Length: 337
Image (cartoon, rainbow, N blue to C red; front, side):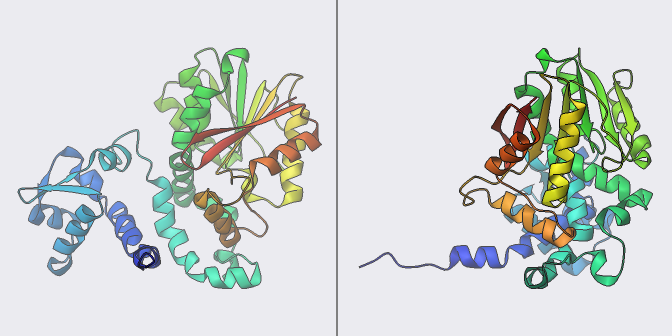
């Protein structure tokens, strides 16, 4: 007699948006930040968040059942993970990406079926509005949230890039499209001899400089304003592109790689950081879902395998390429000129 089939996995995945939205609302309400100073009883936490009496008890207990809060003697407290990653008062806060998921992506993903049938974005573009970057970059509040989101998304990977890549063999590093500056900051913190900075649109400057200043790194990290499609890239021993290439179509991806090649000295390196899809395209679910997110958000963007990226680097002239896992779903593809 064969093993009895169970629908548990199907139901958990199919109804997974319940738990996802519960966590995203908790981040929006700053539950984990309010608990950053210590445990609170139901009534106090409910009143501080302005929640209705009917909903609060189930909401907080759901967070406990989901493993996002602890509960002892009627008092709610952060878990070690939520205290570290979801308390806005801590420098380790990585909720920016989840804030953006709540404010933008959650509703857009409701139209995934339409995207799969049409191949068209389902964000602001669908309703005659501006594209992702135009919508984000024209609004200072949205821009700062987006840049924080990029830092949160990439934090673990950035730490690993700084640890794994042999920066001791190089002197300068500039991140292309570096947003808030998450990668340059981690590299500079880990390697005191490195100087460099961030190349991004001029509107990003104050956000980057405030972030770099918070780590006392403005003497070593400079902002380089520009548009990477319209201008040449700044020269450095090492250039990096973190979660940049997946925003663009194949022709645009190759154009950016060629620009990086041209800006590097002989022996220089390009580091591409993405949620690299495994070559069999069967294991890295996050990378594949991120590629679907590019379908939702962009006209031509997509994520890719390490083998594909190595091929683009070699086509541009890089003499040596390799793939290295970083953290979670993220890996880096390295090209040496």
